[in-house]
Length: 406
Ligand SMILES: C[S@@+](CC[C@H](N)C(=O)[O-])C[C@H]1O[C@@H](n2cnc3c(N)ncnc32)[C@H](O)[C@@H]1O
Ligand code: SF4
Image (tube, rainbow, N blue to C red):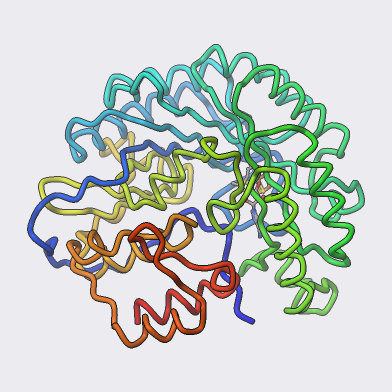
């Protein structure tokens, strides 16, 4: 069985210097959000290939604030006037930033793209006691939602994942977060070595018992270039086979749905109404500014959609911004076909599916025979006029998307 990668927050598109197609009308569906990347961590987890770096000397936050200010001004000129419905501080480990730094960046964002009254402002945090002490400071700085990387409710497995916190410390951080914020989410990684469906069901029930409105549940993925890839290649890290992976997936769907937090996206579960609105901007193919080292953006200017990407190395990014006012190393115009493919790829991750009329307006075309075959196989269906993956289609979404987009 082919499973789909459930960790990538967005897809990077190949370069294609063609103008926007369809009807030549700017496509602004999906909202506008701002992503800010903080590329530092205390330690590098052996499974992780995010753009995160460990530095012996802590970064000079004042210098980073100045650089963020410049890159935001540059990106504002590209995006034109927008209201920010969401802001997301991702990493890396943004909870290593001082609350005052987060507050200063939010002020600059608000000047560039005034936040809507109900804007969602999320910060990713590691659940250590040191970081939990800052949660009230983040709240005062304007953050209204946190997403904690709990990863496992099993101490031996946390150690195996190279985490710097115990289960008790992580749950204490969740409790502090729940006092500081109305909206709390946490991440767990499943399909870990030796994990059985029963053990995962029990762990998941315990996680749901914490009473959070949102959970991100990722299947452990072996990423290229990580220590886990080397261990896996050497046969020292044994992962569940396809049947066991499928059983773990099924348990995930059943237990979360029973608890009232069904999947609304491949790896994301929420009480209805508590979905991560920032990530919905990606999945509904909205527009977003990507600020900081290694950040992706999708900006619509006039009737052209740009894919931007910034320098990944934090120090090189800083130097570029200080010299040129921004760290963007790639700014590509997406062709109509590329936009349609991206929209399909992102939208089918959602249980709400995609609006095929918009897909067609973007210039996309679905082969009716292939669609009919997928429908006959029960992998996709139409719901409220939208094309959706079914419960049978989700575990093989890669195949569904490849068939439709191919
Ligand atoms: C940017 S990271 C997390 C934030 C924070 N630094 C932390 O680790 O607590 C986002 C999430 O991606 C997930 N993740 C990262 N690498 C993964 C992998 N190889 N397989 C599955 N999930 C992964 C983890 O659950 C992690 O919390
Ligand atoms: S999982 Fe989080 S803490 Fe670990 S290296 Fe990746 S970004 Fe850093």
